[in-house]
Image (cartoon, rainbow, N blue to C red; front, side, top):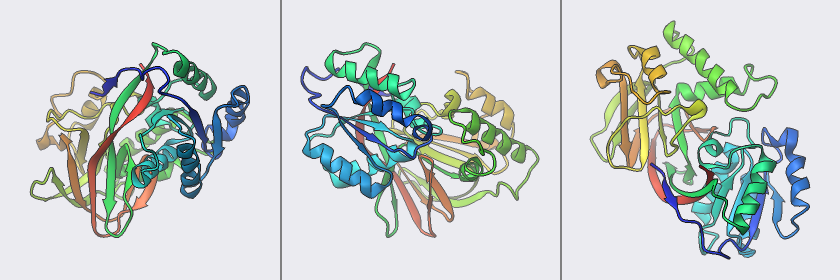
Length: 329
């Protein structure tokens, strides 16, 4: 469960800064509303950034301005880039509090560790909270994933996925979303399409992910999974909570084998509090809480909706230092 942190002492949030990605799914259509609101608060730094280099420059400015609270007005990919820069560069003497707005196409991260509602309304609540604690907002501490590949700089985020998840993202960003629809509907429709492919045993559309996996330093085992993911999010899209491991560890790991049994029964149960009795290892369902995991795999993986090449080497995922988020209750 996420750890709730007491409200900062008065004066602790001395300065709010806002980073906007004008190319995110939500800001392409309604980004000017945030800019209009911020015109009433000239003391708040507001900078645009669309790529990691620009974000590094913006975050450096925020650090030099003694920012205590960074509002991220962008999509999941923008949040992932900011988390990576903050962990990699150590720009701040004291790590800032982060507030995430639902300004992306899917906004899976803000729906779990962000401030709910339209970006302008959420930003207004954040500003008011910084002056006088809003009981509807709380500070939560949440671990972050650190993903390491051979010969590459580490990445940080909150949701790692491989296998059919990557195929779903490719579908989502192509012909199945021509209107640029936002929210949870399109991921749900993409998932439905994936389920149909699974039920009709369409290996061509969803080839299994063949890989070696080692959890918490255990002996690596060969697996063929439909998909797997590692996350520190408590809820995924449409309220889904597909994990049931009971170990004492900060990250959730779930894998579904290439040919699982009772798939519909198990998936339907993940939206309810009572897990299906069919969600067993023998039926193709594995879930644990982990500190770290080592994968040897080929192909793509996703981190917070962005696709990366795993190459042909190892991918190591571990829990990094927790980050403080300002969240809706």
